[in-house]
Image 1 (tube, rainbow, N blue to C red):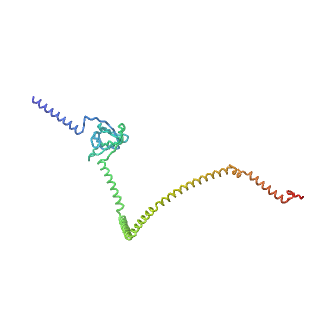
Image 2: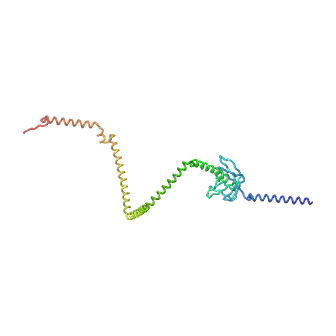
Image 3: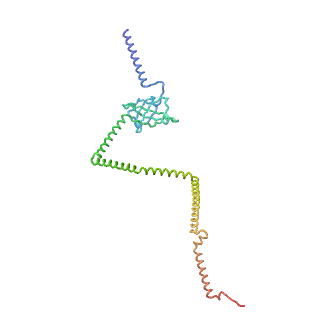
Length: 298
């Protein structure tokens, strides 16, 4: 009887310890049975060390878990769940970020502020934030490049001729700098006078413009009016030019009386023949005046 009592007590202790363990795991994992969840998928160019079961936080608040990770058209498709109180907007942002020094990852979400809800049937592209391991890898590559650059500089500047040329260049720069300083010191008064003259000229010009503002405005108006008249004259000349071109074209094609006179050779021949006949008649009258003039005396 006593053995059974001991076994019963041991069993109760084991059951109680198991219950405490289960409740502790539920508390640590943040599992709540009173919340419903929905799933969504996002495409990332890289996921680093992200694994199934890693946390999903919304503005720093844990709201889900990563459920599935698979390759998708050259990228990585990550499927995760979220509690129903998380409302994703069209401008929501998804980023895989680093948690600690060991490269642990989690999915960070910013729900967005758009008035349009996110279409949960279509995955969108997310961002991958490099963690400390990736940065250290980049640092190693950068150090290698810096070492190569240092070796190249040493090869270029390490020779005696290169060092002498560099020293001479520095001396030349010092000499040029000293000459510029000396020049400025010698001409300081001239520079000051020049600045004063410019200031005075600017003030006088401003005063002149202010005093003759009305005249300048009238001059501008006159220029504007003259420009308009010149435009009208140009338009008129263009019209006259077009009319002359049309008239010349008609004359060349033989249209109108003037065109026919200029292009009809028959009229020219007739006029020429008539002139010749008149000349012959005049010559004949001179030779035989009695033939054409009859004088009778009463």
